[in-house]
Amino acid sequence: MKVQRFFAKSMSEALRQVRDQMGEDAVILSNRRVDGGVEIVTALDYDENMARQRLGDAAKEATNGSRLAELQAEQHRRLEAELSRSRDRIREVRDGQSEKDRPEPSRPVHTESLAGVYPQFSEEPANEFAEPGYSGELAQMRAEISSLRDMMSAQRIRQEGQRGRTDAPEKTGTSAVQQRLAERLQEFGLGAELSGSLARRHREGRLEDGWKQSLKMLAAGVKTARGDWGAEGGVYALVGPTGSGKTTTIGKLAAHYVLSNGPESLALVTTDRYRVAAHEQLFVFGRILNVPVRVVDERHSLDDILDELSDRHLVLIDTAGLTSSDKGYEEQLNELARSHHQIRTHLVASATSQPRIMKSVWHCYKMANLTGCVVTKTDEALTLGEALGFVMETGLPVAYYTNGQKIPEDLHRAESVPLVRMAVERLKKIQQQSPLAV
Image (cartoon, rainbow, N blue to C red; front, side, top):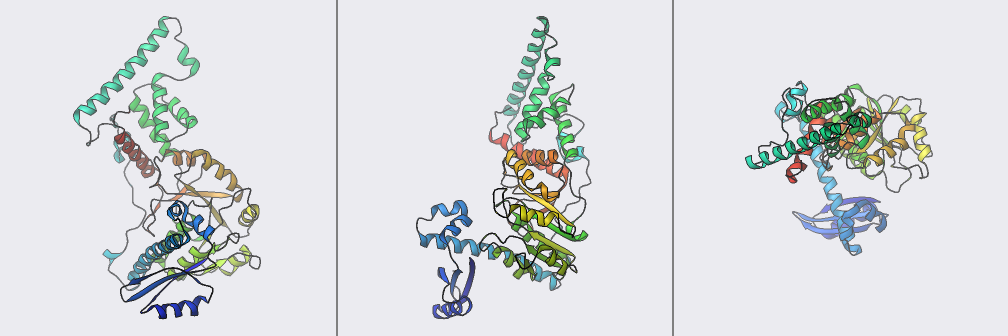
């Protein structure tokens, strides 16, 4: 399905443009008056079922075909508006805007130690519940409840010792403090197995000491990519399930690269020839950024296209979100794995996915020789521990993470300490919403 918007001074002139550029088979999705004339949004090969799939939950409010068409048109306007902003920024750079108008680099410079980033990593134990937003009475109540829990746990151990069962903690391998630490790590979003493993490394001491130690180990265990794709160059492919954000992430990467280096040394490629109109969004990015977009199909293999693009400094490959049960799943992954070009394939993992789903997706795509991952939708996730636990357990270096739909502002180079800090802040936000939870 190809969607396009037309502007004209009158309705008859707008319809003539539609007929000339899209032919007699074009379907009008919406029309409205705007400043200076009228606007028409049209589509070729329009299919209501496909439109509902693309709109997702937003399509639920469409009770008839007319409303569905309007929603499809609104979605197209929003996409064009976002891309138009990126195009304006590129034009500003090309026209020689002053340095202060240039966008800040998406990768911040972090020189602080873990102790300087947030109190949990400081030398002195900090009470993470003592937030400025809490009243003194509430903070005191929380401290008292925490103290009572520790007293009850210690009393239970002493009673077991008096009954001759002092070896119970050694048999289970878990003390009362370790148990509470494991529970807190699970609230953070880590899986039960990883939480237990981190908690058991805390042999003795206060709960806060174990919390700091666990966060340090988590930050050390989360690998991140060292270089920037734009600076290093090469061929990069993004794989992952439908809806994980592959195409939007490629748009952000491409816009970021063009802002710094121009469009001449960049190319976009898609291997998605399995879905109708799968290339539409990528072609929109290509038109606005003035970057060529090539499609892998029966006549043009991936290696043939990459041979033609060998003079490009950076090539970004978008792929179809196929599962192991889909037709073409193995064909697509084999193209990437067996290419004679050095393709650095990265898994796109949504932070909103459940840990089991993340691992299942990883198993589906690891045959493509994954070299890293990109974590998307961090702004939509309730907690970030699930994503951090996933990358720690799989060992995939995180190259980038995204936290919104803005292009290219919401794309960031990944660093382990800021990621853990962001996850801690997300946990604090949850605790503020449930202030009596300890």
